[in-house]
Length: 282
Image 1 (tube, rainbow, N blue to C red):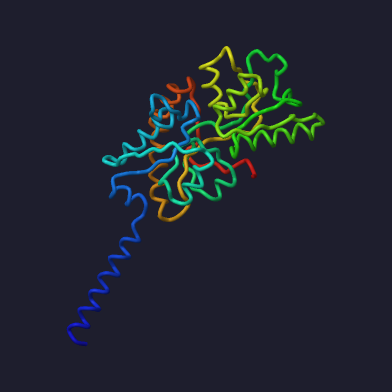
Image 2 (tube, helix red, strand yellow):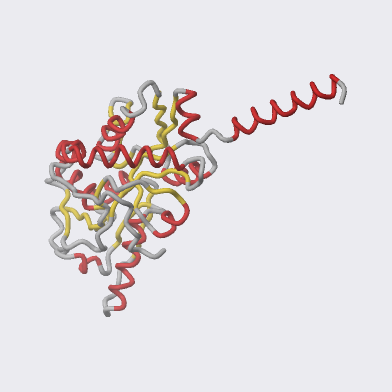
């Protein structure tokens, strides 16, 4: 082999190794190197996350701040995204991670990496405080009820309606689907709907803010459920998902999570320190 051939072969091998090293960098390593993480949030889910004075605030934002203390020097770029675009955007790598309340359903469990739970997602019904025709969830038969399009709360409502019908009741007149829960609450307050299906933890915040307008019906209409954050379910994303889980577990064990729950909800929400198997079959 002549000197030029040897040089060419050696240079090719070096370039190949360098290329392999670049490809082998997982998402967490890339984030540390670029010193930025891009987070997607649907900031329309008070008190978990919402816009105040032009900024995203809420329980999830405070918990995210605690999580990111574990990555000093990394800038958080948090973007407000409509719910319908959150998970599809994550799947095509528009964002590194999703920090917004996501119900643990079978479909999401199978297709994404869900974090340890961060809140109670059990579904209940909100009504107008003045509506004395609604005492229990069964009373929604023959009425219009709202929920967010594509949400786990919508699916819980649909299943509850199926149960009502199987029990010999009329079922709801219409299930109205909304792009955001704020729109559903506005229609409920105006009398255009009779109830809204939402997580009981979120509804507690709504009633706390407007007790003269809204009230929660009991019991809940779904099984015990939880909210998580979301990463991609691939080898490159696993170290980042593991990092989030470690920090969420620390927030749970240290009492930080309970303190934030008291701050934003006024009560504690015990959550498991593992991802529960979904009860809901989509």
